[in-house]
Image 1 (cartoon, rainbow, N blue to C red):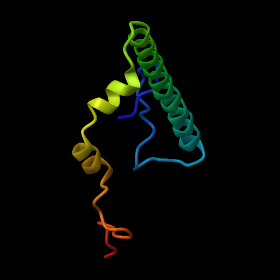
Image 2: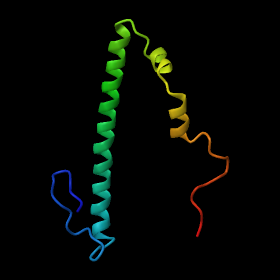
Image 3: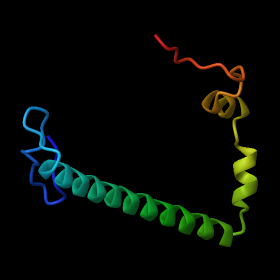
Image 4: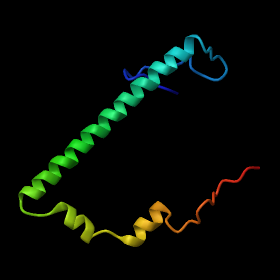
Length: 94
């Protein structure tokens, strides 16, 4: 069940009784609110990370250098799927 930012459930947004004119606006407003909330969370997290990096650099350590020193090349390749063949897609049309 979807909930508004106030915690109130959006009871009238369900598959059986969905009305595009009425419920569509409410759903759009909910999704906009949802996006704003998580964008704010992301921005706050980014600011916290930047503050920590600045603090570490003020103490004389080079953050960029340490990132490179502790970078795991194999893990990075696995995560970014570097070894995949060009033009190959694991999703095939049925």
